[in-house]
Image 1 (spheres, one colour):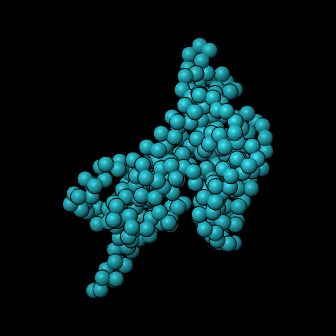
Image 2: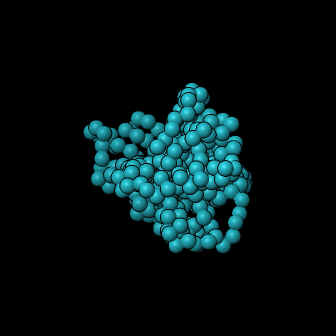
Image 3: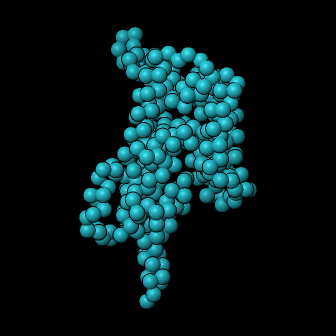
Length: 307
């Protein structure tokens, strides 16, 4: 039997394992998606509860005030979106020390954890784009056109340049992320119109169009976590059968270049959002979350046979 035929049979065996999964096994494979929804709704709920129900951590100490651009937890811990702060800095405005401290705290957090973790686990727009992608797969909608994913980096540069030229934080002025958050928490603005536009764009025009191709905030976090992120998706090339299911469900499939990631032992691209779609689906356990310092040690162990 040829090597190509052997590889094809191994891949087919992996696909058969996926199709043979029981309902509890299928539910378990959705665990990261469910945890992401808990995280995303939880962040919105804390903001909403503080604003409308007066949630407090102690007497006269609000639990979480502000919004995703700038907030304060428990009246002590300042947090600010570094991308928003960078835009405001470029406008020429003087930044308060507390805002700079809040931006520094958030920046370091995602610098270590992984920049685009924000996109998959915090950003509320991700829920809308995931829904559009789910419907797109069920309805077998074909993209109207294709554009390079590098357009988002052009959008990132444009937002910074326009902020400096106009004296206004360019992306913050039109950000659907901020619009949605304000709409849900405070009931203001045109957030739902912006969300509907993104939903229809992702569903009918371009797969993963907003998050995967256009969003400058996602591009910013991709740059931040590219080389320093410690939470990575480990890849065990020895057990992989190249069935292709990981790339099928990944919103950033270009990061799963198996030949390249086999060299490092993990998905190294900053564009990976650690969404957790690929690893639970992999029938051979070839993909899994791990801390970067532990990955080499894991991959030096004898290969584990997954039945």
